[in-house]
Amino acid sequence: MATESPATRRVQVAEHPRLLKLKEMFNSKFGSIPKFYVRAPGRVNIIGEHIDYCGYSVLPMAVEQDVLIAVEPVKTYALQLANTNPLYPDFSTSANNIQIDKTKPLWHNYFLCGLKGIQEHFGLSNLTGMNCLVDGNIPPSSGLSSSSALVCCAGLVTLTVLGRNLSKVELAEICAKSERYIGTEGGGMDQSISFLAEEGTAKLIEFSPLRATDVKLPSGAVFVIANSCVEMNKAATSHFNIRVMECRLAAKLLAKYKSLQWDKVLRLEEVQAKLGISLEEMLLVTEDALHPEPYNPEEICRCLGISLEELRTQILSPNTQDVLIFKLYQRAKHVYSEAARALQFKKICEEAPENMVQLLGELMNQSHMSCRDMYECSCPELDQLVDICRKFGAQGSRLTGAGWGGCTVSIVPADKLPSFLANVHKAYYQRSDGSLAPEKQSLFATKPGGGALVFLEA
Ligand code: GLA
Image 1 (tube, helix red, strand yellow):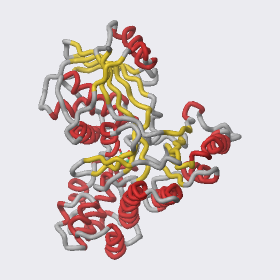
Image 2: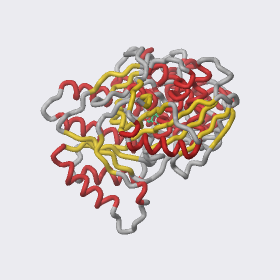
Image 3: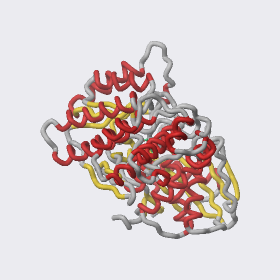
Image 4: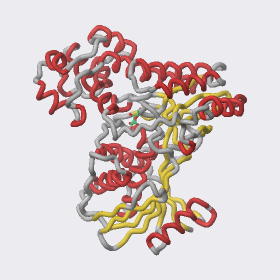
């Protein structure tokens, strides 16, 4: 399993309307026929939010929405990218000189991240060029990982053009690392599930070493995704990186408090592992060691015995160096409690007690509360949407993905699905003020989908 590579499937393109349309558009754009196609799915995280970059296990599943790329390698070094969506302009560059501009999260930069990751992994300075036409149907900036799907798809495209082989695990690790060229300090959840997903099962994703274990979701319930229609692009603001840095600082202060070698510690999980205690005990240590009042940079420096300059240049990321307030207690409480909830969720799925849907729903509700109050990554629209979802029959509902906008995920008893969809639609999307852009509205039941694949025309 850990050594398995992404599958290659032979398909009759004429029988797959999306592939066929892509082939035709490719032909009119580049005047030739694609040599192969790659798909990589988006994901919905069921539980375990903002804990992957702290070292803790998360529980996502792939959705059927994906990024699909038609590819033709060319003999020059020119890389030409086009998108079926006219909102995303064409881009071309030399495959020998990949520059990723961190100041603006432009769509093609995500492709370049995947390409650069593979290029660097093999230590190649010369890459052959290619023509690529990208088609995505994951709603962008909605917490369903459209950007990581593009990075992963581009990584697999590049690997295939090079005719090389890597395992799904290696690809996931390379793409998680290379997406950071865009400037966000994400964990590895999105890229891992995009490669390691299998149809019909959610996965518990564990890190260091990366592995994925099947989690069988209850058959009597359906997972429903609803878009709040508030856009959140985590690369366009510093919210996301501030949280990553708050967790890093909390880990260092906790380690120092417990007389561990704090300067090497980066993640909250490392503190727990070094102390060899349970997550519940880590919550108690957090209560003793940290205070709920926000910390300012001076206090953090005093606690760690370092200068402001050292804090800025050796610990903080470039876009968080001027932050004046860090909430360490709240972030650590969220992370340790959320890590415990993700593990409990898996345990309940395995033991399958009679009231499992209710128990799983409660964990999802607690997760939302903690994201809202302790991690402060919700927003009024998401809070309103989860309330509406619960009111119309969800046993549990929570924001999914980075938050501050984007989607919710709800667990809904299967027999309530039709009325749930109708009522949520009416209550959230058919507002009298008509303020929600129709093209962003999406409310759909989802099933665990498969991972990234290469298609060859049969
Ligand atoms: C983004 C990141 C992930 C993860 C989630 C929050 O999707 O890319 O690594 O941190 O946010 O759970």
